Length: 431
Figure 1 (cartoon, rainbow, N blue to C red):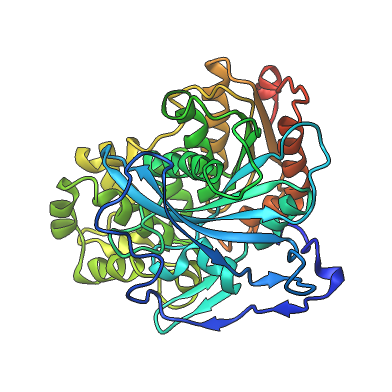
Figure 2 (tube, rainbow, N blue to C red):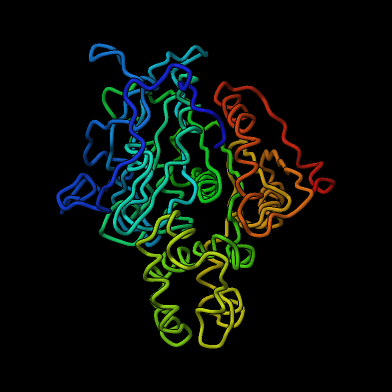
């Protein structure tokens, strides 16, 4: 984990970290209404939510680290259609001691999976979800709680489709991801009785899938959400170029993420259905179907995809990256998710491990270069890793742990309007 629970020293007077639950119960909060306010960021419904790890001193005292409200809000998918997304807003118990109104962080979780049980709002309620067909782990809880311990409000998006049964979760689809992060911030500002205001500075924070979502949000914000007072964006290990990530993740402990990505993209690209029919073996199609309902724990333990290669899913023995190289429709669909072609209007930090064994280092550095070339205030942070970790994901997760405190402090400095000059000039000299 990136940082110990800020409140662990107090002892958990009410603590629940394991629950056996169905992936989705009919009539639950996650069922979208037949009609709703389609405006981006509009609140569709809310409900009180209990946090898995919390400290309570009685009904008259606000529990630590804060009070959670489950939200469903309007957003926009990659086809420009109105969609509903869920998430959670957490009002900190701690008072904000900095200048101005309480800040808000729109937090984008790392890879959770693609099944309904994987939604971050679910694991924030239970810590771990174990169901008959899914294993979900709330590994982002310490990082979220670290912001709350500073008196900073946090809104966490479930992205589009995660937790809900109306569509497949659009994993790493850049427009869906970026819109969901920005609209979660809009929804938080409209929530009563949240203490954030229209003047509250906003920060964007995410690592891995979340880093890609934040990167997409940062460059979409000037056109999609120009009214939001965003002050900075931290994008850790961002999968900015999926063509390259398809290579680095393939054959690793998380080969399943390649399947997550193709499932997500295919729902927006009807032409890929024919490609899947002709290019994938029955086992390959079955693997994608299983991944569509799997969480990160399943990708590691139960789907049979860990340390396998996508070439074993195809009729010709070509990997998914080779399919993209050889078939224009596949390449165009994947390349459409490329981040770095638009210009963020706020300072950004791009952090990457130099031997990241899941999300290729070079493509993350290229994102920093692409933004620097457009005049963006970029702080590029390469975490030097002397040796590889053989696809175990240790080098991918390492910087999230070792650099978590520093990454959060960088964003807090932006929320407090402290200047930063970036290091684009030095970038060619950095690993």
